[in-house]
Length: 316
Picture 1 (tube, helix red, strand yellow):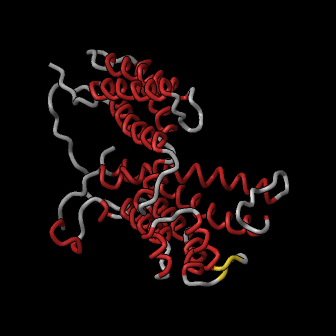
Picture 2 (cartoon, rainbow, N blue to C red):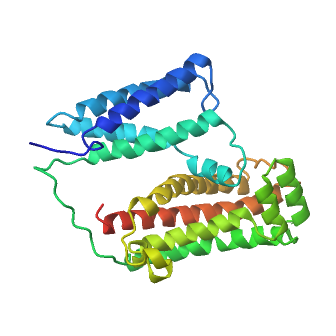
Picture 3 (cartoon, rainbow, N blue to C red):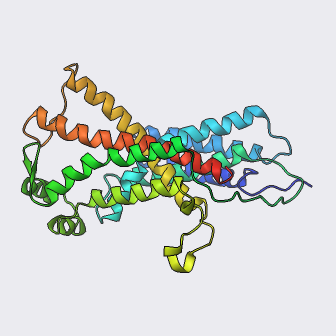
């Protein structure tokens, strides 16, 4: 008798699809906008119902190639809807309110669905419970580690810029006091403001965590807890532990940074005008934006490369 996990045989996808469709119908029926449009609730409901049907069909003894393609297509749609979840997570970590609660809920549901749909699409039958061989810890190839170095170095100008402001200096004609006043005006949390007063920028701390994650994906200690973790040393690192934030970061930062660089290139060459916002001049906006987008694009692409390598080296 064929046995498959509850994710791979579609049961989880079907259940999630019903919940996702219910959320979409609830938003559409109540007039709640998703990403600024009320009609998107009907789209969410349609995707959820399609996923529920596909999940039910995936439980049959034979799963066609067409159904697998359909599952992957739905996975792509939900992954797009989950874009920006990392930004919301960072916002909540620092005690700030997200721009839209329904949008954040949608992103969370979509991220869960993308994982479940991918699991069902990749599901394979076996004659019983086969014990998967866990690969030995290994370092990523030299080219992948080179990408990790590039992603790390891409953050340096951004870190310097943020620390200059946090320490009271000026960058691109903007003083640290001006930046702090903007944080207060924008409703930044008390934790964020306290860190700024101590000369620590919250995004710099997050960048340090991101670089730590990046190197964990390419070095053996990302697969087995190293000696300095004390009670955990020698134990296997659960694959989901680094892969969850890595996939979120890769799916958010890489497209955000690359699209941002394209936008800034058009602004720099005079094809379009950059939005200045609270800054005084377009030159200030360009200088600051180039530093930020270079960091996000460089790190995001490196994270994509490192995540793929980790996935393959750990049995993906």
